[in-house]
Image (spheres, rainbow, N blue to C red):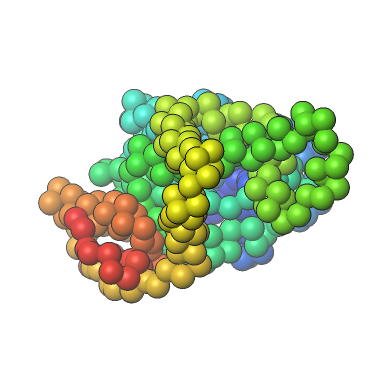
Length: 354
């Protein structure tokens, strides 16, 4: 049973590198009761120097918390989830920030944690790493994916409310596998392409001349190649099947462009780039329409938030997952006493689903 949605959360951040550190600083900036923990003693001291409590022991950081963010390396998340779940009460909502969701969501389901673990992924970052690169505004206004389970809607609501309130985040509800398919093309394949372009330049006999003339197109196209290599490898391996599938689609389009170039087919080359330009342009010109959606909940025990009945839960979950799949997001989530009210933002012209 998760705690009352009206209670002021007590938050912990486990793993305080770039992402975890930025979450920690954002929560601290908002005046919340927040603790941090990191396996590295020097990092823990940096957190303390920032004015945030950071015990030496993990259990001391999470034991009395009502929300915990798990922000360590992707391969460590399942075991960290197991440890933190055992060190916290049943009223504590758990989430992670890993760039792939299938494995950790499956682990949570296998260990009976879906009622309070909500897989998450903030879509923000830089090519830097570590607590000293962390900034409190890294996620302000960012898309933040959350993957609600049928029995985890109360936990999802509490977490969504926190993210909207503290970071002004655009909460995107998605199923774990759908998230992994989408980010393969939106985030993970670009890391491969950036690495390939930068790597080819590095191996070129004209390397120094290429770097001397590198302008915006090269710099923009290779920016994420500056990400720490271990982090990139963990991300790609953690979503390998989806990445390979989407990489094949990218290769097919590239082959079309290359064939048009080899054939000196100006019309085909122009058409391919016109199609690509339209997609790129739509990144910056996507009008959204807002709407409110209310769902009932039943009273919980001892002031805990209401839990929906089976039919209500199914309807709420369908609405949430359809919104994310349509490219929409939640701009607000709040309790109405008898239920929950979402403010949904959907791309204009996108038909309602679910």
